Amino acid sequence: MPWDVRASNGIWLPQIGWRLDASSAVDRAVISHAHSDHVARHREIVCSPPTARLLRARLPGRRIEHVLPFGHTESLTADTAVTLHPAGHILGSSMVQLQGEHGSLLYTGDFKLQPGLAAEACQPPRSDVLIMETTFGLPRYAFPPQAEVAAAIIAFCHQSLADGQVPVLYCYSLGKSQEVLRALAPAGVPIMLHAAACQLTRVYEQLGWNFPAYREFDAREANGHIVICPPPHNGPGILRHLPARRTAVITGWALDAGAIYRNRCDAAFPLSDHADYADLLKLVAMVQPKQVYTVHGFAREFAAVLRARGVEAWALGRSNQLELPLGTTRDSPGLS
Image: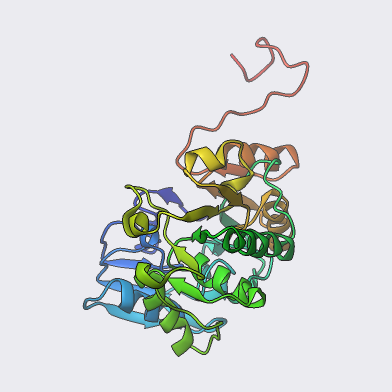
């Protein structure tokens, strides 16, 4: 019997009674990483050691934790084994491989094939069924080399400081802030982090990661510093005390026209912790699945691309527009 895969509060696998990345509390869930939209107060979880540490900092409380080192296989149910593999998205992020009577299934969670500065290198295994995130699943999403983007960010910071402005980089507190902090090491400029990013960076340090010197944000002493803080969705927040500032958002969506205006900032740099379109295709070639389910972002569009390449692929939880071969008419057999 093949895998029964459903989009219901994350990914629901009714044959084994577990969910993957459920965003509302359930009895049992495998958590791919510690971003807030992938976790909840579940009764029992499976995750990697770094994810467990980050969860304790972000989501304290009692739960049953099965903490699996990467590459270590354990029984999840009586007839299904689970193995976690590095996903390259943020520290501790995991691809979840299940193996049992239904065959092998790989759930990527959020992933990035290109080696980052603040996450383990992605190591996808082969699998019969692939459930993959397709956030940037259109050809126009082709990220430039990461070193090139980092150099542009540093140049932006140096120019801002030379103009008497405080450079402010908008980054999410977990993952992106640590990636950008390490990328800024060659800048030779003191750095301040938002309090939430400070807390999580200290967890990284406890787990053996090294960073250039930084301190917690203090508006009274911010002149001459680079400031890393979350995007101000509800107004300037902590930045209201920095009238002389120049802002930039760090995101893969910087490739979209109008990114500067949508984020109300002065610049946008396309440094992402997700795979771009080319690497989404590369992942499928690496995993060699018999069946693919796509989730998030441009799931329908990317599934259609895979079908055109001869791969059975479906956007999970979406309506899938099937492509008719050229010359097919409504009177053809099977289309009545």
